Amino acid sequence: MYMLGSLEDVCYAESLASKAIASYYQSLNVPSSHRIDHFSSIFSECPYELSALGEGVEGEFDRFPLYRVDAFDCQTFVETVLALSWSRSFEEFFQKKCFISYAGQSIDYFHRAHFICLDWAHLLGDNQCLVNITKSSASKSLKSLLCASSVTIDRSAWFQRKSLEAIRLLDSTPVDGLDDALQDLHSRARTIAPQRSELVCIRGKDLLLLSESERRHVLASIPSGSVMQIIHTGNTFCDKSQTDVHVRHLGFIIHKDREVFFRHASSEIGCVTDELCEDYLRRCINRAPSMGIMIYQVLL
Figure 1 (tube, rainbow, N blue to C red):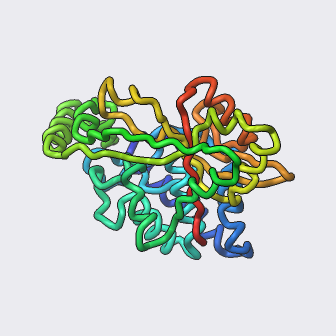
Figure 2: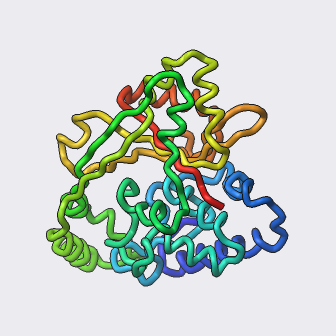
Figure 3: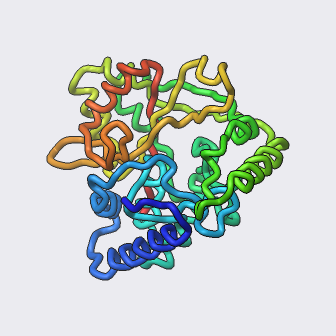
């Protein structure tokens, strides 16, 4: 993992990433259906770093790399692998990554997909990049596993809660400059209206209450390479601040060795890792009984 203390470091990280990504395609001979598994496996044990990406050296508030391959958080890992899997060159990867993260808009902090429960809508519409198969996955069971979850996303309050730590201009920017940028961010966020995120997920607790054979059947029926999102379904989730995210974590479902794994960038383990999906879900539910999951099949 590269230490980023200057804009020169950012340029270096992006330069190394562009060379690495170009090399991935030079000898690529993988069927489309295996691309998610292939590209995500490249980053096995890659270090975890929260908020690994920004808007690059031209960023107004966050000048961390626009793309990188040396460190990820859960969202940047998934977005990077999706962009790689939908591309055949570095140039195409760059376009896809920007499309995923900024929905075809300009590269701007306010346009970034901070709330994927809402900000991935463009991947589910006419572009048909992802298909929500949560309901059909739940129907593989004899019991109803579905649960509706609704959360208010108050972007304005979320942005205004940002502190100086969120302003990553690098190159030893004076505190006055950081403070001015933070005040500008707060000011511009005031007019953003709240939105409602309404999702239907599979209740994790009910999934684990199925018999072993039913549970294994549900998980095994999820196509390998699908995106799994961890959803908070508790009614009190946003009562406190109304500024939290609805999707708490995400990664890929991977089938290997006749087992179903969850491949993700884990803050707990500290790197990109594979865990048995059932073990991961059981651990999640022990900590947050109200969690649920959503499944998106990746179209390749």
